[in-house]
Length: 154
Image (cartoon, rainbow, N blue to C red; front, side, top):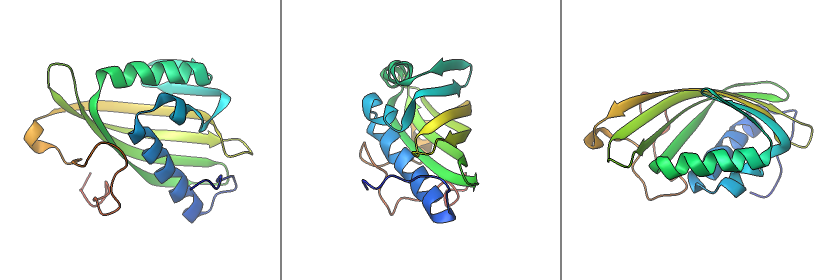
């Protein structure tokens, strides 16, 4: 998986880019995740606006300190030469043990080296009971045989 995927994207390479992003985020390693973004990457995540890898690392460190047992599934929605639109959902619980499923959409813009230069994410949280969790696998990369968002009806 070391091959860098660069624009222009095909359906196949866009799907690969999405899966690599999912796998990286499921690592919950902010430094690793930040390497997929350009050094001056611009983000909007919900109501937070930030720029640069150091800001991304700080944001993700704080995020995963609050979102316990985080598990994410991303799915390609659309793409063109240097842009990818993704829909995603993730499950997590807070310090009190309340579970959530967060649903969202991301728009990604890539530079010529295949690094994400811009990420715009809109996300909504829904309270769920632990028994209603759908993203159940050992922490880390989602197994290949685990259902996708579409397979789960999400």
